[in-house]
Every structure is written in C-alpha cells, then in structure tokens.
Length: 550
Ligand code: F6P
Image (tube, rainbow, N blue to C red; front, side, top):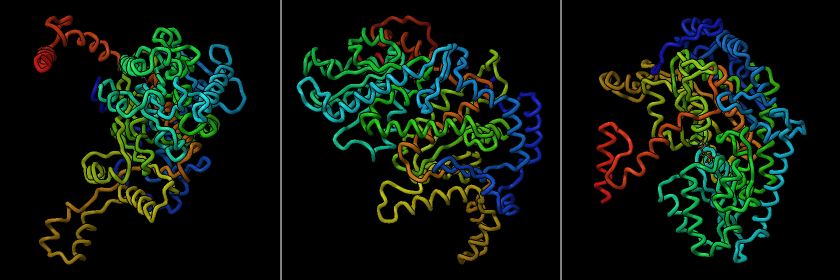
C-alpha cells in the first residue's frame, strides 16, 4: 500500500495520461519556449491583481487537454457545485463543507441540511465587528479599567496557523498600539515566554478551539487563566477571556462566560476556519473593515473557481499540474516559496491545509488507494531559502516543483531592496527551467580564462539539468483582499486534488492514534507502572525519561 510508485487508476483519462507521460517525459521546457513565443501568454491566468504564470511547467497542449479530460472525468464541475450547495461531501463525518459560506458576499442563501446558514454567519460577524471595535477603541476594557493592548490567541493547528499567518502577512495594517501573541505548543516554554512579557491588566486571552477538547489548548488556557486569576482574582475572568468554539458546553465548563463566546459550526473544518470566529484576533489586529476585505478577496476567488471553465480556472490548473507531477512523474513533494517577508508563515499554514486534507490512503468508497495522494509540502521565505535548500532544487537528483509567490510592490520600498528581491525570484524560475548544459558550463569556464584541465574538472559541477518546473504567482501588493484570494486559491486547489484522488479532504483521523497513545503514556512517565504493553524501544525511552526526571 505504501511507497506507491505505480499508479493503479484504470480510467480512460488516467490511462491516456500514462501514455502522454511516456511521450512527453523527455521534452525540455527550453525547447517548448523556443518553439512558441506565445507560450507565456497562453499559459498565464489572472483574477483581479493576481496573476498565475504556469508556463514554466512540463506540459504541452496535449498534456493539458488530457489533464482537463481527467478533471471532467472526475466530475470536478459537479463536485465544485456540491461543495457550494452544501452537500455533505465530508462523508466520514457526514458534514457539509461550507467555509465558502463564511465569505459569501453575494446575499444568496447557502443551505446545509436544508437550512440557510447565512443568518447565523452574519450574526457572528456582527458580534466580531462590535467586539473587535470595542477592544481596538478601548471601550471594552480590562477588569481594572485599562485598555487591552496585549491579545493572546491560544489555539493549535487550524485554530492557530491561519490567524498567525494572516496577522503577520498583514502586519502593515495592524493597529500600532495592539500586540498580538500566539500560544500553541504544549511545551511550557511557549506559555512562559509570552506570559513573562505581559501585564495581566492589559491582556486579553482568546481561547480558540473548534472542539474545546484539544489538550494543548486547554492546558495552555488553564495555565493562563491561573496566571490571570492569581494577579486579578476570579472576577476578572469575564473581562480577560473569550472563547471561539463550536462547543458551548465545554466553554462553559471551562469557566468562560457564554456571552464571551463566538460560535462557529461543524461545517467549518479547523484548517478552513480563519474566516470564521477563529479570525477574531485578525479583526482586532487589522480592524473589521480589513477583515471584510480579506473575506471579499476570498469570495472573488470563490466566484472565479465556481464559474470559470476548468481551462481558465487557476485553482484547477494548479491542482492538475500537481497531479501530473505526483501521479505520472512520481514526484511526491512540492515547495512553496513566498518572496515576501510578511508571508513567511504561509508555508507552515499550507502544510496543514494540504497535508492534513489530502494525506489520506482510503478513498471515498472505503477502499485503500493504489496510487499516490497528497504530496509533502515544504517551503520558506525567499531569498533566505536560496541559501539553504535551493542547492538541492537546482542540482539535486530530486525534482521539486515550486510555487513562487511575490508582490510587485513592497510595503517597505527601502532603497532598491525590492528590485533585488524581484530579480531574484524571476531569476530562480528561469534558472530552474533553463538550467545550464555541460557544454554551456564548459564554454563559460573557458571564457573566464580557465585552463583546459580546469574546464574538464569543473564543467559537470557547474552544470544544471534544468527542466525543473515552477509556477509564479505575481500579486500587485499583499493586502487583505489579495491575501484572501491567495489563501482561497490554495484551499480550492487542495479540494480539486482531493476529488481527483477520490479522498475525503475534510477529516483528519490520522492525528488520532498518536494522541490516544500519548494519553496512555502520560501517567506512565511518573511512578513505576505501565498501563500499556509497549515495544522495547518505547519502554526503554519511558524508563530513561523517568531516570532523568528523578
Ligand atoms: O490536529 C488535528 C486538529 O483537529 C486540527 O484539524 C485542528 O485544526 C486542530 O487539531 C485544533 O483543533 P481544535 O480547534 O478543535 O482545538
């Protein structure tokens, strides 16, 4: 089942792609560009101020037609429609998947189980507006009457990564007198380092947890609650704690006033939740008007995705190219490299989005799959990563498709920093695509005055295979609207791939086993007994931990 190298899909479109791969695998992108000076124009798409140039990928018209045939065979237009109309496409949990309703700006009703979900969504948005305004303008104050200027989001996974990423991406739009902090890790260091900096009188804790049962979040929240109560007393809690959750009962049990709770619903997956109440810290940081722009940007991408034909549909095209590499080139990885310091947390956010959604091995009809599904995603901010893993991207034996993301205009146009940054990202895409043949490397060395022996000794080391694919997503500027478009683009890309692989992209049962085992090991770390029968490695490690901690 694992280490799948062969794809075992037997449909017509899939088989056609297998033969297309045989025909096409040796074709060089350099030659495709040389043969067609309209290649870039043909393979560039745009939505508002977001441009996708996908011409530096290893495909031609016939491959693209076959990929699109696969999308039609997998009924992607119908699947898109079924998400937007609230069908219970999260089949294992029997839920609708309606993060798109959270940013539905059309005024249209959106149904889940026959019920319009828009009134409740709009009600919570209004509550978020009122509360975030009140905090920003100092109307909602701390227990001792001071303005709340330190906002701490306690959450993990989807209840953390989206808000962290967006607050950083939109730092330029954040209120200057408000500091945002994020506690996610159960490691006490995460809590301690932040609490050490804060004054309880000016601190607001946002406990973000869809289920309100996640051990990391609840443990961190309890620690912070104790810290606050020790300083200001039990009565202060109402003025310093709010909850974002679908689980009112647990919120109350925890000791947070239900009036201070912002609800969301089971049709919103954790990793798709930054548009919901989970975005409260974003609202406080950038203001509700900007949060609405984020929603509007996502809505613009939703409309593009919902209405454009597949051949002109940015998320669909990116998804299909990903499938082409994953299932036909057998390349099970890709990198996302934002050339923007403010977007440096985007890869971490996308890791959860993509890998928690499509890291699956059972199809929607309850069979183990016989083909590769979700790839490994990694990344980091350019140009930093040019000086770490780019060596492998250019000369390693592993081909890694890359998405480059870059704004044309920086928020910090200092000197010529941004031109240098832009020249780098554009050069990387070109270098990966063109490479440098051994003959070209030899010629270059020769021209640089190297001896014949030196040329011979170095020419292979200085050569680049090229033919390495990349997408370039060029945005005019990173603002709330364009960021909303960008995030929604990746959500929909992941959706299309999940549907082509025929997996349920909306559950995450793979995170459960480790959690269950941790609960058994926890009491075993103290004392001398073992509740579980462990393997010899785990047993020895538990004993070694006990010894160290004695
Ligand atoms: O890691 C599993 C997971 O369920 C994620 O899907 C989710 O985003 C995260 O844990 C946090 O869950 P919750 O918001 O319920 O605390």
